[in-house]
Image (cartoon, rainbow, N blue to C red; front, side):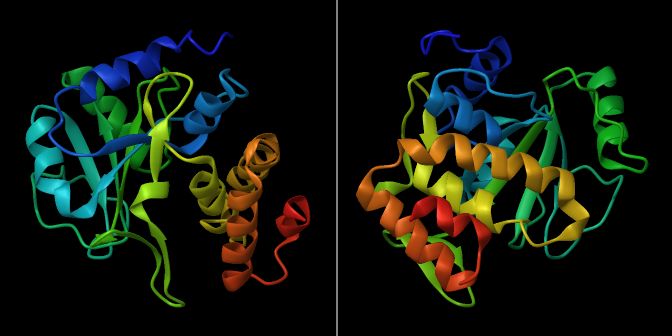
Length: 224
């Protein structure tokens, strides 16, 4: 797939975010594909990141969408749709566009036995924290990155989380949790596909930052 040929569902996602009055970016597995300029694997959903302190703007921008929030206050399965209550980090939102069918698909996706529609139209919004000119990566130990290295335009012409930060999250978010064995396998495949495209500076940053959290991380060898 040429770099200029954006998958239809990703183009539609970008259109949904058109006019959003603050920062947003493609993240997750589709962001890896955006940097590589081609689809490398199947994806369960479309991941988009916004800032935690912009959550009200997101709710207003997608006011007609169906959303279910998972945060520190309510991490488990819930039938409650997010109507704008204040969300506490860590936060992610499952979302589908308006319509009765999409509401049913969202409930099937977010409630046991967790049956996704597999139509490429499931959205996950990840809310990240910032402080001044820094992006907060981790609280304890404290890890930050300058906002200037957070988002760039990918070959698909979309705001996209940069490869270094994508791979930091791919390597650390769920990697050591056995509950997410299948996801970890995909994250490792994404990591190995994208890591050759890192600059030396970003490769060093990624190696040093992962090592602060996991000095014996098996993926550090790929950054040597």
